[in-house]
Length: 312
Image 1 (cartoon, one colour):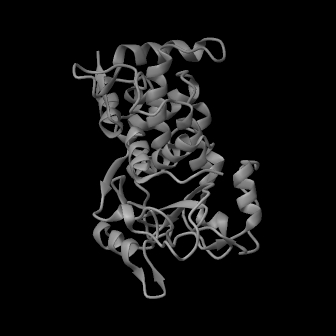
Image 2 (spheres, helix red, strand yellow):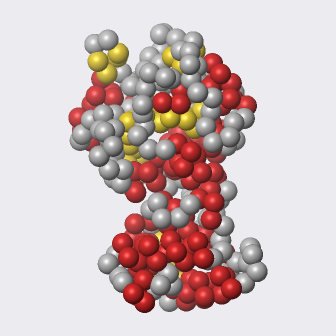
């Protein structure tokens, strides 16, 4: 259990984790105070909105409905990966769920998924941060890589601030048997969050492998990545070459859905080779141009999406 983060602490944690934040006027005092407790907090619940469009979705989550007043979450994650902060304190997002799920989250004691919810006997609005993600939830509306990356970063930021593991992050569908959101798999998202929590937040010193002249943007070397991709697959299990730079690229491949989070280990082994080859094919390369060995153009394209520069 933990005391809820202050508004300033939440914004700082999110920005330190590399999240783009929009603070909507009045969000710091927008809540459901007087309609139940807020805290102690135990985790994060992820939702989807069943809406299109950023402005209308943010307005809905701010205002709520006649029978369910806003805020309906603490932040809205749009398709570009920007989080729009709309509430601070108790919010009408989780509703009632299963006490067995809450106990498993508090203990962080379950395998791939928490216990199946069967009873709605516990007030989740008091115990969870909530983030609504703009998606129709119909299985056809895509989840852009930028949006999934932001969800990962948001959850990791809050877990890091409270000293939690990724097992403190659940989907609404894992909290109650009356909901189906979000429409992506939470075990995979928890794996991504676990991987991210293994690194320092991006806003702290030495998080990124190298920086440019003003120290603001990280960079990886084409030569270093090519050497790692040629050396690591033939080396003994667990061997790493330029480990920090490789991990940075592996994280980008994980965010793209091309590499399982298990293999984000700093070794440019066969799994990373295969994932990078898939990235090259996604860019339109074929044959020997999609061999899994990084080149400047493919690496630059990846860096453009995940905020790192590429050097020789």
